[in-house]
Image (cartoon, rainbow, N blue to C red; front, side, top):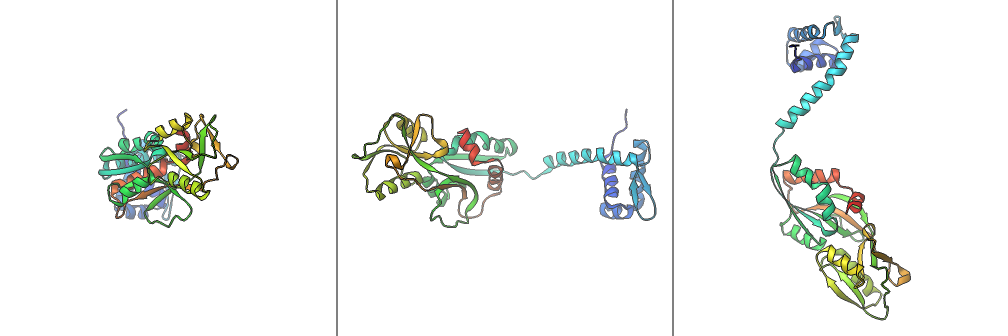
Length: 296
């Protein structure tokens, strides 16, 4: 079989179906009424029968026309999607993304690979660290975007926040066989200065009038979690990220409840680049706080 369907003929046919008139379709397509009629007749030859019933006012689909319209619509849409994929403007440029340490692994695994696959001309640079350090680098223009954990209470409105992803609940944790000695300074596993969980831990203990000491300070989550599970120190983690080797400490253990925090995607001061907007869209579409917590 050598017959083929001309996409231009299909487009004319669907315009006539849409507007219900040859004259309206010809105006929409910027073609003469005779050209529109010719396109429809050529399709009818290919289809093997009449597709439209015509009078002076309107046109109506025949049974064959209804079947042809339904099946050819999918072909026309597929053609247009395919063409758009090759003719869309190429987005290029560099995007520097900072990710709060707790969520780096999951985000790198589930969302960011889509950027390199769908937008190969965008250069992505990822940096992990504490929220405080990432915020400082944002302010200095050393990052374009950052995924930050920040306290909810007293958090001012920030026009730089492009997306919020829900609340996190920090909790005190220790090894299962660790028993706090309330008479001694609390041994802590802490992030460096600027981490919101570090600040909330120190403020809570200070508010109770309790002494504390830093057993380990690290920018990496793994070292802190290892120290906690080994029974060397007490730490603070998101409730959804408590590991099997940890138990949550409550008021009964002498540790107060901690305030909730929020996970936010924040941009640097100034206008975000087109490549940055693409990344925001991908993170916004594919990122779910619960999924990140589960896949960590």
